[in-house]
Amino acid sequence: MLTTTMIQTTPMKTLKNLREAVTKERTVYKRKYMGFKLEIIQRYEKFEAYVDGEKLDTYDTKAHAQKMLMQFVREVD
Image (cartoon, rainbow, N blue to C red; front, side, top):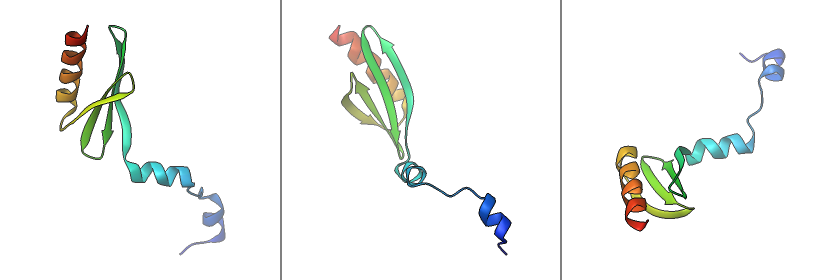
């Protein structure tokens, strides 16, 4: 049973918090390597690799995404 004090002390969920919970997107890897900004973002169950803000590809695991980022940067440079 909800009482008046419980309602007043429980913080209200904001729209920003609800959006973050629904998108399930978070940065799991961020690094600068050989002059390139590397980033891996987890969206749901997939990992998206970015080089200087441009999407490289989508991978199943973080380790595979990290490996391919490093390989791409070595080949480009």
